[in-house]
Length: 383
Image 1 (cartoon, rainbow, N blue to C red):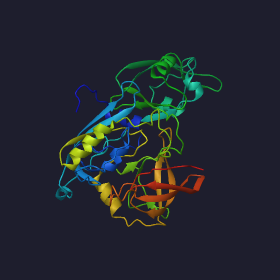
Image 2: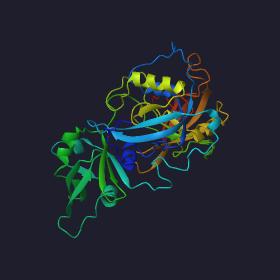
Image 3: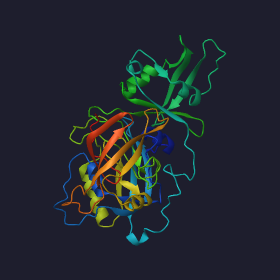
Image 4: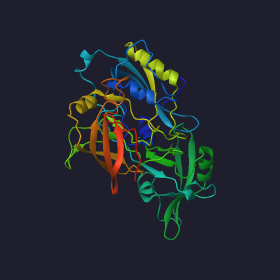
């Protein structure tokens, strides 16, 4: 790990990453997918000339996890150190009794996310605070005052303190952040479409984070998912809390920029894959809000998915998080075919194995095809 990097509180990190992002805890066992890691790189990687055979997945123990944020954009990312294991060690305890925050049975703190409107992002305007956030996340407001007003103090992902004037006014009355908000917008370079996250930490501190909007690209909402073998509604349920999770992404041919652009160098990915193939400890960096899916997945989730006899015609459902992180909605779909994505370079790889048809709530996409792995989507073009 790099000592100069300052770690974030895991709960604030998860609030900024999205409540459905599941990071494997220290000492848990995961399967590392080199094929998926290669997609996380800034440049295309070709392993055809590699002298070392690269397995499609590598059993590893998580030796360390560090939760971090980009000093310029506030975008959260994680640095993990992985130690390859022998497959004979697979059946031992894999630490799945510990949640993604690294604490057994811990409850998630209250948090709220809002996508900024044009008015919110206006330099001279204020921020319209949703009632739930004002009454649940913010300190209690004295409604007997006229007008009800207070100073709200929040820490960002770098520990910097921000002061906002919180007032309840207007006809009809609404909660607003006024003084201090424009400075925050300017310094963070926020625009309409970005999201702001407020979290009430366990120690009572109010924290603030950012989720950058994707600049460009097409497609539907983000859809992290975790596969399970159970479920209702006549199909396979894809539960949100299994570590087997991924994001529904825009068409792979779209030029990525803004938050969606991969941040990891091709050389660092190539080095990690070479070390993994040689059964040596290695380090990876993962950006949960980049346009690439998770590639380190808990062994229990992988084994559970592989036990399913996938076939065309199977029905399934998978969850995605609403923009304010307040509830889970669902995609419904049908498996169209089961086929290896790249049988020449990655034979027998389960990565993006399933081609499916999806429906999103009341928006039906019966004519749109999607290529996905055990948990991972590559295309989307919502009608």
